[in-house]
Image (cartoon, rainbow, N blue to C red; front, top):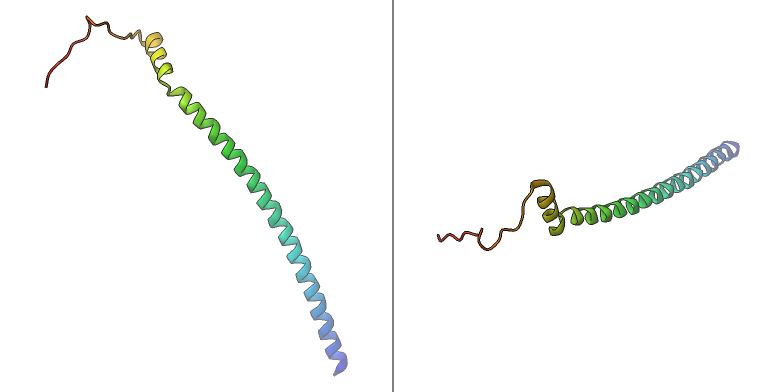
Length: 87
């Protein structure tokens, strides 16, 4: 009976050692994944900031006015060209 108990304990100790080894491996893998995702988040935040800056540049009043003048041949009307209407 004692021999059987020794084998059972040996199996349990080996199983426990394997479980600890797997848990450590999984923790390292998840830590690496977390760090990779944090780096990606930082990259995306940088890209978002650049896109916001680009958006404000493309939509600026000065740029729109410049394009209207150059591409569409538009100009600010003179006082004589303005017409006021009443409702």
